[in-house]
Image (tube, rainbow over the protein chains, first blue to last red):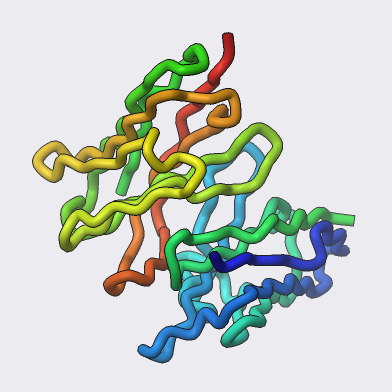
Length: 112
Length: 121
């Protein structure tokens, strides 16, 4: 099975400052169609998860361009260029290349 | 687009429960669907999915042989039949719609609000 790891697990950020979360898999997530099957989700307190980024770098509908995804193979990064109070929550990466799909452990982003 | 789960309840160990996820606002039959759960204070765990094209199903090892995912496209409804429930199945269960091409899945863009299953005596 593919195992996902994330770092850091806790990320305090000053509003207006950038934030970066790393996600790694123990196997390549690159499909032979050229896409990386890596999504990013944000779960705010008391809410359902919401899609931020799919296929490694495609921004979901309604997601501000402050949020971006990059990476390929086994190493991926979610970046927020200027953190706002509404960005607080748990960020999860998820691989969908192989069954079983797997989530990372989550990174908690808080405001300093 | 809306997804509305129901069926969560308090059930004794060894018991059974059926969760439903009624969807609206999109062509249900065109999308693969997933169940994800979240135990109290824990992270997200994929449970099961069902493909849109041929109805193939997949399960996490932790639920294989005990849970059955199904869909009724005529009723725009996704189901999760859970049996031989254990304390460790206690969680909020979410349904979500996604895309699969054909075995690799991604882009779970709409989620339900979740339904709580508690397994306890």
